[in-house]
Amino acid sequence: MSKISNIEVFPTSVGMKDKFTIGTGFVGDPDAAGEHIFVKITTDDGYIGWGEQRALPSWSYETTESITSTIRYHIAPLLLGQNPLSRNEIAKRIYNSLKPAVSNGHPFAKAAVDIAIHDLCGKILDTPLHSLFGGKQHSSLPLCYALSIDSPEIMALKAKALQPCSCFKVKVEGVPEKDEERIKTINEITPDAKLWIDANQSYTPANALDLLRRIEDVNQVYCIEQPVASQDWFGMKRVREGSHLPVAIDEGCFSHFDLAKIANLECADAVVLKLCKSGGLLECIKTANIAEANAIEILGSGLTEAGIGFIASVHLFSTLDLVLPAELNAPVFLDSLVGSGIEIEDHVVTVPDGPGLGFLPDEEYIKAHPLPS
Image: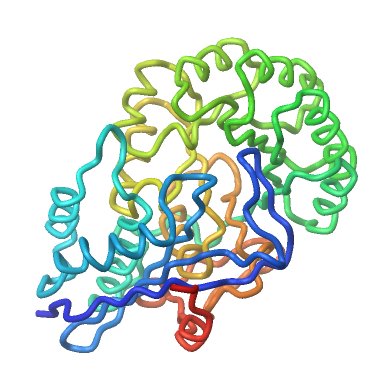
């Protein structure tokens, strides 16, 4: 029986090849690399599992320092000597040690470890990660890419350059007339592409309804995501009641407990699944189950993680029925996926069938690009 013998944490700088700005602010650009935390878990009989998450305090509260210290000093001691196949027991130990307050506690740190544990399990059992969740329903997944906030013309040209991508997440800034121009210009340049509007909490309910009225004639817009502040569930309900489009919740839903409340409040038509905010694969699938039971549509997304986080999401999303292509931005925004084994053609990714993640991390890159301590 394999037992966990070592846990290593690597805060790593991963370069960006384009500017990325969302409604809550700056994400990165070629002069400001992203801060990624890689986790390597080794067993006493030589198996290795890898996990990853990206720190982005402008999106959620965890920082590089908090994720790193939480894993090193609070989670790692709980893992030593444990059988990695005992996923439920490990998750319970971590949950009991790092309790959530209202929603979800330290989810990014938990997610990085959870991905590594699942990678280990897949390798020990010689099976792909998706088989641990019943197996893939889809052998490939089309991808959606985010369009960073910029002038309407630049956003539209970037969308055109990414063809034949069939879906774009249009980032907006919270000013109805400016965002209307962005959406309509992108639609004119790429008239066949679905548009998924993401406000990242930048609107008030009244202004969000103003934007929705302005774009009623843009038939390719599928939904609007997180128009108001994450904690403003009643604002979400107000927008939903006045909207002609489905309203999706993201930052306002970090756990399956959150989604159960949201379903009862009737304040969202769809939920955006992210491994990072859920605390990993096990918890994310619980949210998907709550969504299905309450007729809430499922969207898949990430936080521009590199290859490990990217392919972990691909495995999980392949077991579900997403209503739009998965928004996983690493191929467009990152200089490197920090490893090999990902196959993408015409913005469609093949779901790996190798053991675990089916991805080979570039450990030399990780060790050669440390973040300042």
